[in-house]
Length: 169
Length: 149
Image: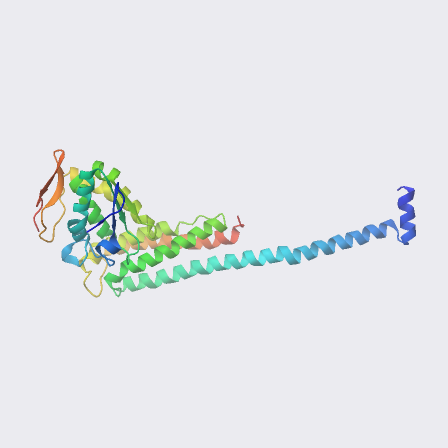
């Protein structure tokens, strides 16, 4: 320590070790304040964004389950099927687009959804009964639908995990 | 019947030029079917762009959605009558709201129906249609190619 530094220390009546301790405290307080304000705010924002996407994922799953249950019970009107699929396609498309932008997550919900859409809307059962009040899927169509629906559900569950693990882009 | 917008591209917007509420595959299954769209609009529209050396743009957006069978029947018949070689470079599908339809038509329907055409697996007609165009021996010929079944 040079004499100037020593004289400054003595002039202020503080030991160098005390000054270091004070600086240490100030830096610690600064970091704490920074963490509490900025990091916490970012964390809260990130959590809120993740919660939004997870809730939307759940919403899609719920809406899908209601739709398929109605179809399985032969209670869905044939001429309303394409509009339901169109609305759901747009919803999933927008959802996936924002997920890709916000996080490094590349879900495949739309891919499975499109398979279900083509399977149901291309089925002879639906087309032949288009003017009727309802339609019933054949056993082989149902079996195929169960398979794709299972993949769709697995994809949704994996998506929740991926969203929770993801960091912001 | 359909709009001639730019010099090199004729356009069909299904919502405005055909129907906002499209139906099933065949005429006998319901209104505004794929079979009906093909015979009342698409066949004529495509034969015109072929003769005039233009492109045909078909906009699928803003309707109440589609059954895949509607699109399969309409665009499939187009391939059956004109071949994939002639149709593919002259057609553009717009489907921003449901982009998967464009991919399905170009990748699946075109190939499936080209295979059907080559193997003479004729499409079903559930209504009596007026004469329509088909590419035969290097030229377009109008005829009732398939009778109602």
